[in-house]
Length: 87
Image 1 (tube, rainbow, N blue to C red):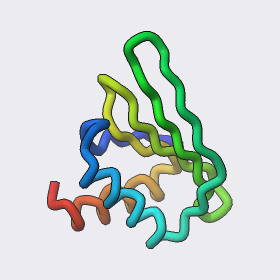
Image 2 (image 1 turned 90 degrees about the vertical axis):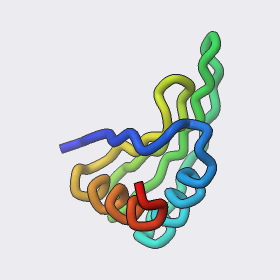
Image 3 (image 1 turned 60 degrees about the horizontal axis):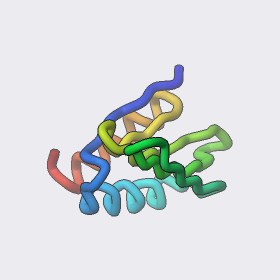
Image 4 (image 1 turned 60 degrees about the vertical axis):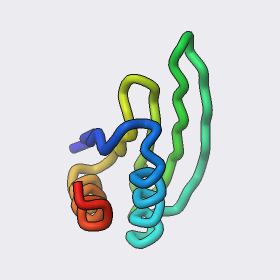
């Protein structure tokens, strides 16, 4: 099942840096980066593969920093991120 977890504010650099650290730790491979502006919203998207499955990270105005992927992968990533930043 594909799930999305909102992790922090889109401007939270500590959380974003910690998330990238967690993705490296779990072996995610970056495959693409996208940036878009739609009206007053900015959307930064990083696409990864993890164990051969797609995973995406987005920082979107008014939405926040999120990770989307297989439920088990998202749970592992959010748990480790909480260990690092304590939220």
